[in-house]
Image (cartoon, rainbow, N blue to C red; front, side, top):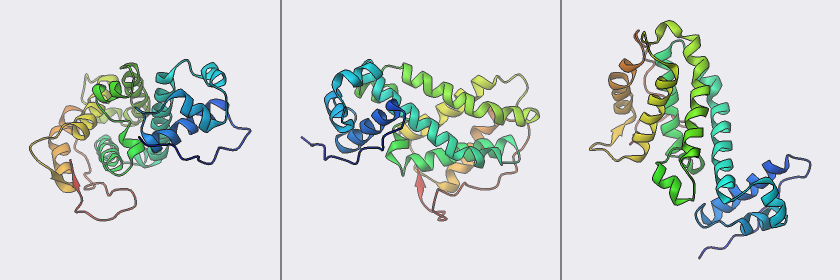
Length: 221
């Protein structure tokens, strides 16, 4: 059984809940979310169990807090890149491709996009999954608003955002018959995702390069 090596505690003066989530995230990195206990988190944060429980009602609330905080931070980080795209098709492609590429390289992002069964393995209910859908919908809503004339007539923004996230979840969690290259994934999305959303053609800037890498040969699921 893995043990937790003591990490650097966050500086004082921060939001107490944020500091507790930092401690939980450190424990998850060390031994995994499923093995982390409330005692582990309290010990790493340097607080009592009572203090931890005053902020988070149970372990599920802590894990959910870590996951949703990571989602907000990720969406904030990529927002400038998405809103800079010239049309809806390009924005959707960049969001999907960037998210898939990032999730294959960063475990903290990969943890956001898992099946409900995987969430259950860490003690979470489907409420966390629903909250993630809501976060992504609100993230994409201004993108759809900015390119309203590109949206297929009669398309609900909520439904469109849900379809985009379901596509990401499927590509990351369900092993299909092919392993597509970056170019192959791009073409697949252009032909099968965009026609359900956009009424106009995309400028198609080509496959989105992964963060910190200009290579075009890495395989994508």
